[in-house]
Length: 152
Image (cartoon, rainbow, N blue to C red; front, side):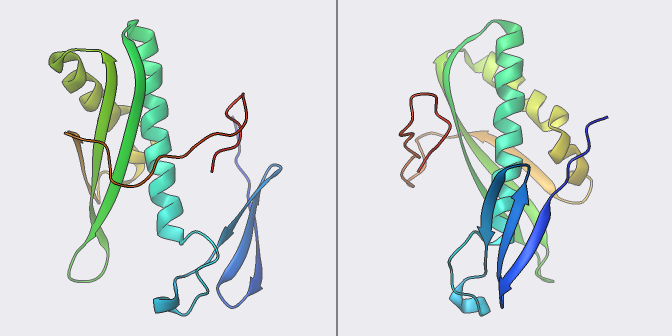
């Protein structure tokens, strides 16, 4: 069984340094919540994790099926209820490649039912996947290393 372990060190007020294996990330709150906006907000990291797990699950499924997919792009947004709790997450997915509408629907259904992180929260939070009609407005990450190990 694989056991994940992280360490978290508070640097000042809301600024924290998180370490997993040999990687680090800074976590902070925005100025509207008393932070300095020098790191990811915890909910951003959570959405990043859910989105990354979704893309990984879709990539494995596409490879297992032998479908020709060049790229998968995911944009995620959470929605709060009246109590301020996350009630719904909407994932907009853009799939580039030789894949038909039936295969896309199969893929989106598969990820919703098979992503481990989503299965953990799906009983309490509504999860929606839709095919995006255009890429998200945010600029995509650009990898500067040949092996793609570092993106900015």
